[in-house]
Each structure stands twice: as C-alpha cells, then as structure tokens.
Image (cartoon, rainbow, N blue to C red; front, side):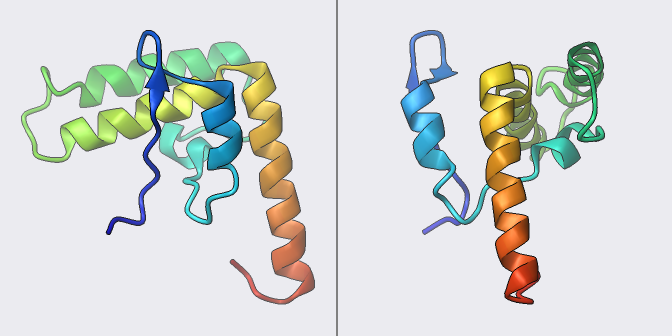
Length: 109
C-alpha cells in the first residue's frame, strides 16, 4: 500500500472540492510550495509562471525518464491547489494548524 495521496477526479481531470477537503485529513499531504519551488507568499502570476517553467522541464513528452510522469503529476496537483484561491486558503490553514500542533507537542512532524 502506498503512502501517496490519490484522488478521484471529476470532469476534465479536475479534483472536486469535496475530494480536496477529504484529502486535507490525510497525514501525507505533500508540500505543494516545495513541489513548485516557490515561497508561501508567491503571487498567482508567480505560481503560474513557475508551473509553466516546471511543466516545460518535466513534461513526459520532453523528458525521457521514469520519474517524469510522476513528477509532472505532482506539479499538476500542486498547481491545481495553489492556483485556486479558495483551495490555497484551505491548504494554508490546514498546514498552519498542523504546524501549531506539531510544535506545541514538540513532535516536529
């Protein structure tokens, strides 16, 4: 069994809001800011530009490697969450709560 998060997607391969809310309950949510290599204060245009840059680098049609498809899926998911203002806010709130719990219990997650 894998520790990675998988989502059922609706419509045009997009994550539904309900699936996203449920995903926040998982312990293994990746750091989408690290995946996109951006600061938490990045603007929407910075997120979009960085996504495009990484997509050009990691797209499986351009990069011949076993990791390219997996890396591109991570980049797409990070962009899907962080480019949506509502989801980004939920994601940020979840991680600030998790950080508070981890530091208060001295269990640096």
